Image 1 (cartoon, one colour):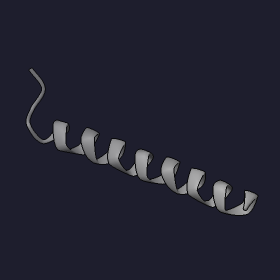
Image 2: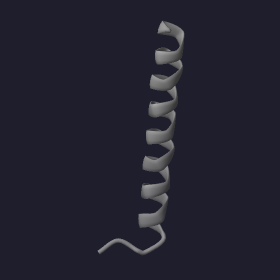
Image 3: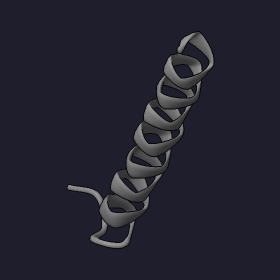
Image 4: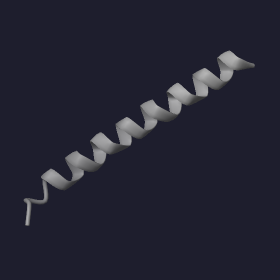
Length: 33
């Protein structure tokens, strides 16, 4: 079992990746319009 500190770090990295991903999609969609 990994230490508890590692889990929030991973989920925070995932949150950042998702936010960047959706931001890219949003700006791409905005460019298409």
